[in-house]
Amino acid sequence: MLGVLRRRVVSGGSSASILGHSLLSIRPVAKSEILLQPKGGLDRIRNLSHLIFAGSSPCSRTTRNVGGYILPEPIRQMWSRTFSSEIGDMVDAVVPFMGESITDGTLAKFLKKPGDRVAVDEPIAQVETDKVTIDVASPESGVIQKFVANEGDTVEPGTKIAVISKSGEGVAHVSPSLKTSEKALAQPSPPVEKIVKKKKPKVETTPVTEKRKTPSSPPPKPSAREPQLYSKERERRIPMTRLRRRVSIRLKDSQNTFAMLTTFNEVDMTNLMKLRSEYKDAFVEKHGVKLGLMSGFIKAAVSGLQNQPTINAVVDGDDIIYRDYIDISIAVGTPKGLVVPVIRNADKMNFAEIEKEINTLAKKANHGSISIDEMAGGTFTLSNGGVYGSLLSTPIINPPQSAILGMHSIVNRPMVVGGNIVLRPMMYVALTYDHRLIDGREAVYFLRRIKDVVEDPQRLLLDV
Image 1 (tube, rainbow, N blue to C red):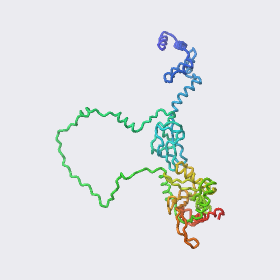
Image 2 (cartoon, rainbow, N blue to C red):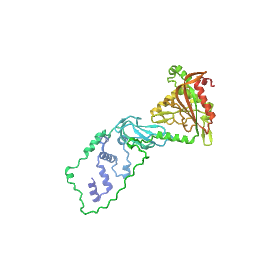
Image 3 (cartoon, one colour):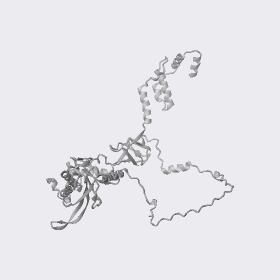
Image 4 (cartoon, helix red, strand yellow):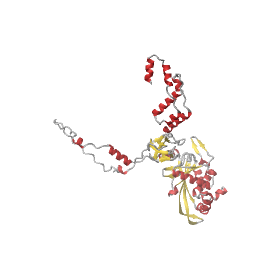
């Protein structure tokens, strides 16, 4: 058609009239023909051009009018669906928001491999932060195509770590052993003839005057006092986790900031253990949770903090902040490190509510699913080293608090009761406090209140 147009223009015809006449000769294209065309780039372009020219009038139009032609709605929807499905098949798995005070984390490990099928919100990786371990979940169900980050990388919220194919196409399931064998086959061994025909390096025949070698000094003998170090093969170097690093920094800052002093006392656990033994079955039947000793100590600590509010306060520069609420932190040791979940408004909770909250927070801490909000704050901390068999210790204050109570193992010891020597289940308790704010008198009174309430729980009912 271009050749015909060129010949007619040369012969004197008007290009506009010729173009309009030529457009009349193009037959209209039906919608059904467009829908039946195969999906391909060139076929789509040809169909689109037919559609545009088919909608044109016999007279000549400018390029602006032709380009402004709008496709019918069914055709436009068909085209948009085709392109969006091809591009939108791949989705990115990104690091989620990790908390107000956390800006980055370390990609600890991948829970899946490329080629594995995942469901929506299924964890595919774990990110360690200074406080908690956060899961990176899959945004869509599909197959993991590839990872775009490595274990040990520092990642921020919004960082892409994996690409997931919703349809599961383009993912090759090849085992590492097959990959290595394929590489070995892909690299052919050099032919034998080439190896034989390699030229030997020429040896220069020019005489070379040998230089007189100076006698080297013998190596120094190791001193008898020099320690013999172990071989490096018997050592292992492992980077600190972010949680362990954060705990170490906070504890060292606590030592450098607070004027810490520890005072001790001992508690007779007879009456509290007897109360627990008598009512444990009825307690479980009514509340659905076991009655432990920790709830008794928390109630005793609440009573002590109410009697000595200075221990519930904190130093802030040249000021003292007194808190009118009591949030008790419970130190929990996990395989990944020490975490301190918080029981909110412990002064308004009964024994059953405290036991339920302790069980919930302890399970989350051990499973690594505890959130940052559940560990933030806290006005006073309890640390029960007795579950590991600790007899006596001096706990370190958990900043920004001002005191911490250390509980220890229960040991039967001979005690004098009513002028007689009897065996009693005894526990040492230790209170470490900030001596800048808390005097020894308040610390001793606080421990005496703990002792009185634990040894005689009826004081809680009578508030004496």
